[in-house]
Amino acid sequence: MKCPYCPSLDTKVIDSRLNQTGDITRRRRSCPQCEGRFTTYERVEEVMPLVIKKDGRREPYDRAKVLEGVVKSCQKRPVTTQAVEALVTRIEKKVQSYGLKEVPSRTFGEMVMSELQALDTVAYIRFASVYREFRDVEQFVAELQEPSASGDESSSMLFPFPSTPQEPQS
Ligand SMILES: [Zn+2]
Image 1: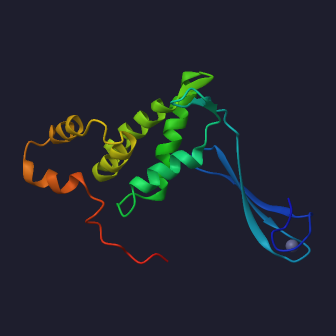
Image 2 (image 1 turned 120 degrees about the horizontal axis):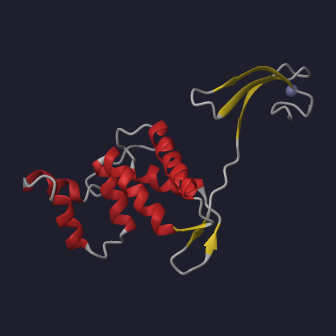
Image 3 (image 1 turned 180 degrees about the vertical axis):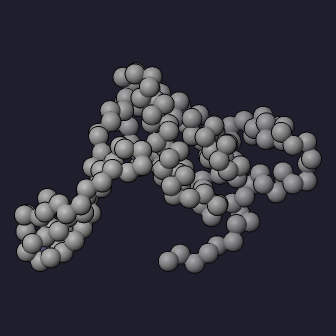
């Protein structure tokens, strides 16, 4: 493993341990050349099925893309990065358990929605409204109002975007 601080290719593992679930190995490495220290993570490359797009094209599964959608929906919500990562991992595991070679992109969308619904209502609404492209607004709104029949609170939650105060980006 190449040293990130100098051109040396000869670095040594000084510590190696598994994470709690036993699927990631974390290695502390040190470079004898410059004495720099760094960490690497090793995990099994799991095989995800191809994703069938709406227009019928197939493309490789892209974890970053799914993560991005979830992260966007969870912006400024009390949802930790760990929770988001775990959510995506759960979906991947579930999809892998089907043992299929190809899975429609819709399946991922539906899975993200049901996961978000359990995690954070506002994030769920954001994701669902983007995902469903407001094609069936009325049905969607009706669905949202179903669990709590009290009208006043839910109306402020329906469109959380414009009222969200802008925080300075670092
Ligand atoms: Zn070095």
